Amino acid sequence: MSKRVAIVGIGYSGFRSTSGDLSYREMIFEAATKCYKDAGGIHPQSIDSFVASSEDFMEGISIADEYVPDQLGAVLKPVQSIGGDSLQGLASALMQIKTGQHDVVAASAFSKVSNLSHYEHVVAYATDPAYIRPLHENPYFIAGLEMNRYLYETGTTREQCAQVVVKNKYNALNNPHAVYGARISIEDITGAAPLSEPLGVFDVSGHIDGSIVLILASEDKARELTDHPIWIKGIGWATDTPNLDSRTDGLGRAIYAELAGQKAYQMAGISAPFNEIDFAEIDDTFSYKELQHIEALKLCGPGEAGELLALGSFNPGGDFPVNVSGGSLGAGCLHEANGLQRVLETVLQLRGEAGTRQLAGVETGLAFAWRGIPTATGSAIILSSRL
Image (cartoon, rainbow, N blue to C red; front, side, top):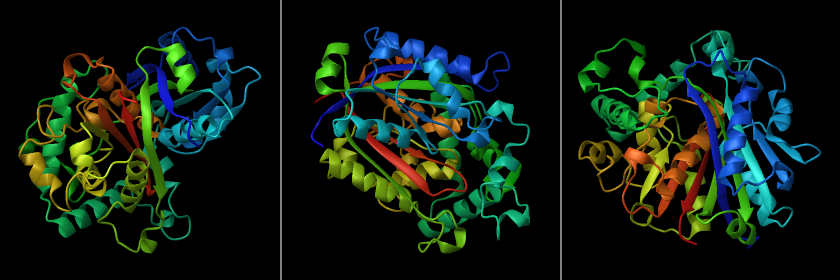
């Protein structure tokens, strides 16, 4: 598995809180068209294989991924469906190239969550059917429990979690594709209505619809297709148990993020991530998750993320910018497409195409995705503009 692999094309569509005028098929077609143009005008029949990541729960239609190939132009081509976060789908596409099966693979994901009238009921259906689901608790109750335990174990404060919201919503004001950008104060957040103490209404990312398509290629093909390949240096993914009563380390740690990060760093040859990586796009589905994930990914020590945040270390001009795009709290949550959304922003930064939110002199970035309640699944990827 020595083949070097790069991302050579990106395309996206939607990124709106609702899209009643568009079907998810139309969004996928638009994203794919942009992606193929970005990858040197490649024709879809020149792509060897396609990977589609989607979850039937979120589309309001059974086996939604079965309708994706037509929109991608994948006629009579191998298509693999991944029932997981799209960064796991990207990992599958990567392995198809590294193992020598294919040279060019497209990965896609989408969200059409605005089709759902009761999102919380759908997520609740994914919880344990014997012990948790019959309680009819809102799924955010689990996030509240996790947040409370994380604050207790690390000494992180409620105000530091609120600062994550302030930072990401402000960062989103520089992102033309962000839906939830705003100037907001810590007092606005801590004084808002609670969902599940200490989790409040502003600590939860808002939903958006959208579609993302990426093209991966082996080294030789990458150089044929683009002058600015973004190389995949390392990738890792891991799953802890989704059963709350079976998590041996409790609710305060993100074990899945620790394991996924370890694997990605090992593959990339990284021993000191804070010093060897320039910036990160990290899951912030809930405010506390950004801090918990930063610590789990060894970007600082346990309980230090909140303090570094308060010092401005994670701001766009800080020592280690995190979620310059606005993250899910500012840009919006794409659910199973969140992983590719984090990768997309990382690629734009590394190609110098991030517009007014562009960071100066960045060469290596980290993207991390969490699959969300009630799972304990995470994926990490290291990308670089340098081979």
